[in-house]
Length: 350
Image 1 (tube, rainbow, N blue to C red):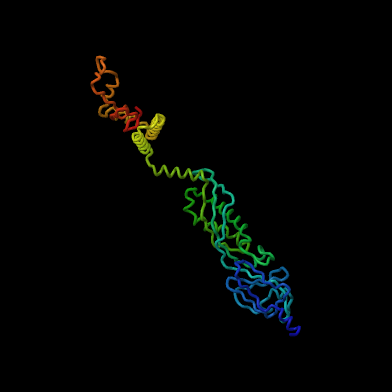
Image 2 (cartoon, rainbow, N blue to C red):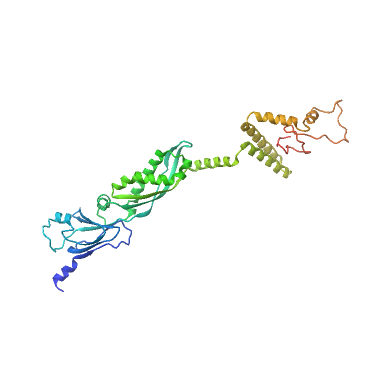
């Protein structure tokens, strides 16, 4: 093989990129080898090829197969001052830019986002989600972001893009004034609005934000506990009825455990008394009076009042052989079991 054939073999005759790396930009390894005039350029779908002459962007090619000549390299021809077509080799940097959609890119708040909520006041939100993008203007992207690296991936600018998204979502949350409790019902709307809001900032870099998804916006732990308590109150319903039910359950438990210690009994009585007081306060001022009237009209109430005044008329105590008189609850008038410490009907301490 002669010297001419050796030199001819060093000229690059086919320029293409078999994208198997997932990179956004790939620099074709020309190095010191020259590109032969008349060489084939193969640009596949979802690709663009850019020729750069001495750091200056020249010609951009979309998908297709091209035979390089002065006719389809007008900018490079002008830069090189090629007045006539010829077969001499030339040197240029060739970059392939992937224009496919890059999906499943993550974003999330590093620090909580502070927002004002009409119901909870100032709250801190944490959020995360995904976004998708593609290169909309290959030449602008190469000029603004890529530089002169050998390859470039979406992860290379993920940190910067994430900060843009978090800033845009935070600003949108503050403007929307959506109550914190209703945020979960607005994830789709927030994602679409945020994508439209951030689109100009991505376009300035030659990128297109094709999708933005809000997967979760979480409230602080103390706010979540407050929401849980409010939900529990909604499940309970009528609080007065619930307190009465709790008191009755406490009495039943005490009756089933007659061997309990005195301290437990005292605590039980105090708890029921507090429950009754709270129930009256919630029900209004009329309920105690109604309860008193019901106690006065209950069967045996008058007899209980009479017996509570002291021994029978004449001042003589009951004979030992006679059965002891029954006792009645001073609150509801129901008969009390012998030796009972609390009324089994209303829980009043005897």
